[in-house]
Length: 255
Image 1 (cartoon, rainbow, N blue to C red):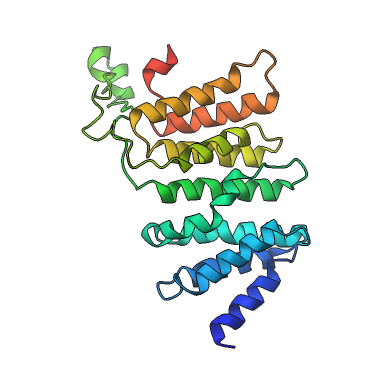
Image 2: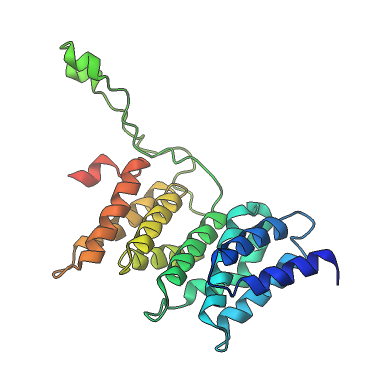
């Protein structure tokens, strides 16, 4: 057995521990397996092993949590072009129902992994349709200058750029990712709702304008229920705050 195999085996053992050792093992695996010389061999073997553990009824809850943590770290640290062809191995996670029997950590890591799969699917880009608040100066306001000049804002262009309406680069799996994150906004644990809100903001920033607007509409539905739940309202507020922070909540949505 080579050195790499011994390291991976030790880390696999540590993934089933309920201590900081599990977090360290997940980080070590992510740093080791995302190396260019590991991506097409050891990494693929580990991903298949991970899915076997997640689908096995005999796996203990600590190991499941450790495996989910390792997968989330791997898709965080791995290069996008190298990880694209690895997504089909783990994409089944997006179709699993987040059972109420899962622990908060397991639901959190599922949420993190889903958003990182979505970010791997979508190329990094700057949304040209995002809201630009322009330049405001408190000093100018105090000096009594015309508010129109000081508080001018730059509205997003109508066409949103040449490629904003081109959604050919958006795979259908993004629908599953967004759906999972929207459900996580209603989770009973704040840490899961917060992670889901951040994921929605990150993914929306890489979408064309019309798809981004659909995500905002879906978030607004969190408040549309006749008998809204506290968790749903809180998750919706977190998501709207994240969208506004990134300039993805356009003024038209505030009317």
